[in-house]
Amino acid sequence: MQRRVLLGGLSLTALSFASARGQSALGVPNLPAAPAVAILPNPQAAKLDDTVNPAFTRLTLMRWGDALLADAPDFYPNPLTAAQAGTQFPYDASLIGLLALPPAEDNLHRLIMVLANPDAPARMVFPGGVDNPDAAGKLQGGTILNLQYLGGRWVTVDGGYQNRRLTDGTLCQISGPAAAAIGATVQGVLAPQGGCITPWGTALFGEGHAAPWLTRLATTDYGYNDPAQAPKFGWVTEVNPLDPTSIPIKRTALGRFAKSAIAAATTADGRPLVFMSQDDPAGYLFRFIAATSATDGTALDTGTLAVAQVNGGHVSWLDLPGDTAGLVGALAAASTAGGSFFDAPGGIAIGPNGRLYLACRGNATRSSLTTNQLNPRTNDDNGYVLALQAPGGDLTAKNFSAEIAIAAGNPATSPGTQYGVGSDGWFNHPRTLNLDTLGQLWIGTDSHGDTSQSADGLFIMQTGGPSKYLITTAYLAPVGAAIGGAAFDAATHTNFAMVRHPGATPAASFATPATRWPTLQPNMPPQSTIIALMG
Image 1: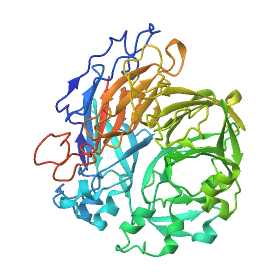
Image 2: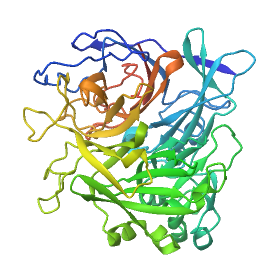
Image 3: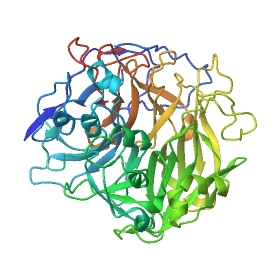
Image 4: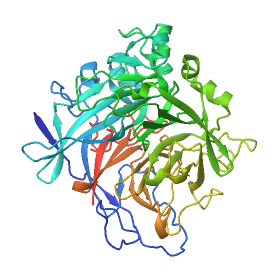
């Protein structure tokens, strides 16, 4: 096995930040109570390179085209072949989370990293934009990656035992109430936007909009041109990342709809509890409570699915029917029950004591007739970060209190913005949320490559104390890139993050990307990259 080491910073540009009064265990500035000062303008427009808070050193861990499986050929994207696409790190990724491996005799610290691979746009991946469906289907899906800490730095293990790709050709089992109607097996995991690591040690992938992929892959060998295949996609797929021979299982009790993000917890009596957001500019928020213990391998096959309804400063959970029709048609069931739309709901993070955070990217089409206390702005796509609180910390409660933690946008030009006092900057379009071991919320943004917006990046929000909802800018991505989540290892003070599709502005192409980050070399394409921010 070969080990790939973290690559040193390529060319970094520092922002000017307010000085920190010490560092946390994860290298994040310890932020004291801040004076009431005006929010500083975000100084970052679109740039070829990234920008790093001086509190961190940015290292790169893995990039599109790096070897993942033992038989991976060298990266040669002009043209990319299916053999490369299925064995190398994919073009696009969102970081789902980390799992610690049991200690070994050599006492090395090891982790399993799990990522979703949402997309492979032909214009950015293939010369001339000429699609290669056989290769494209292998670029999307999921990735499981071995990491180990060696000589004071993280390395990836090429051909590691758990290294694995889930693609359009992966055999999956279908379980739960709808399996009898739609079939017990299916080939492929399609368009997962995100997911999570569960407290019971599995990974959940939330399949997104499958229809475009079914059309795109209709000429491949997996029978996607058969209309009977469509109901087999759009589910939550569960897999055991520690077992490379495990068969992924699509859990139909959690409902069929295009998912943006997932977060999981367990109830006080040990039952799985899963929150899911719908990937749509006007999307629902769902909750699933299992009927049996998480130690039961089929716990996600029985339970109650519910949709959120906004009532003033509260969210109520409305139970949905658990029959096949209600699960396959979960969106229709949510509408009939009276669920409320959120403005492009995305990342979900579950904090201690029943605190739930939801990122809403924004909805430019919301009318004044449909606003509510948690989505109060009309025709505004700047977005929000919402904070929901379960009474007594009980995430199974029927009613949560809720408030807007952050109303995103440029305070100089966007009405209704809201940030914690003393924040050092602002952002648009929050998309991913992850809580570190100190309880700080890391917010990743995604402006879909729009260069008229501020740079996408990672922003740290304080969640309590005198600095509650204060924002610190940790990292700004290069032009065309977005942030695909973060994950944390307290033992090594490492903050991992995923920089998605750099250079992919709306007018960009394989031949003319907006940047060639991270190498900035004229003979290399831009590459989605796992980074580590070391403090």
